[in-house]
Image 1 (spheres, helix red, strand yellow):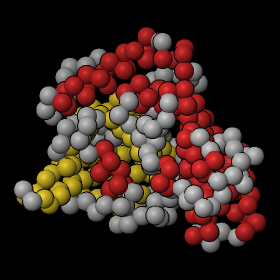
Image 2 (tube, rainbow, N blue to C red; image 1 turned 90 degrees about the vertical axis):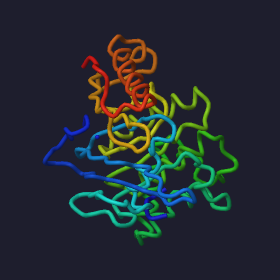
Image 3 (tube, rainbow, N blue to C red; image 1 turned 60 degrees about the vertical axis):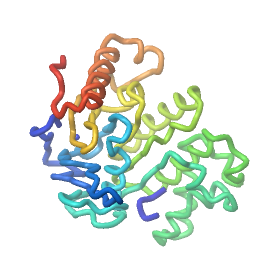
Length: 282
């Protein structure tokens, strides 16, 4: 679905070619019991083309952060900048894939019609729409399902449709909010490999929110660990695994285990209320 519908604290990673820059982001909600500080102070940059995963304990504000990045929520303080422009609403260069893919697809429209919807909104000419939709469906392995309806597809296939819609839009930044949480383990592994393959082929900057530590380490070049609320960046971990990854061999490697342990330790630090990470190996 298009948005039209990451450093240890105090040491943000920065780059000249940052496509996303988050500075001093804070979000406070008003409630019957008074203000609730969901995000305390988050600062990080994302280089163009990077695959960054975001993890944290339940209630850490991961989805709130993603909605601020997508321009769906206005921050209380700080800012999000996309390609040099401050985000103050859903930016045209961004697409979002949500966890509840079934609700994001229109059941009365075919797969092809669902995928081409954001292109219609962007007023893409018909011949270009047809070409982009065909390419996107082929990329996610659904070239022969364009005339089917979402309710005729499995959950994994429906999520592939949502991913196809996002990549057909040709975003500069792709946000994914726990997109595989509702599918079975085998389908999840297939979708993980699909998303990583698409990222390698397309080079689109990807921010992937997940509660699954193994998934974050397997997919990302980088993992940002968020603290408990009020949220800050607790740890920023470079994932130095080989670019070519495989579900069994990669996950059984010693380096994968070491990275997974560091992320797990960060989440335990967050649950304990620590605002800086414990001593952790690189």
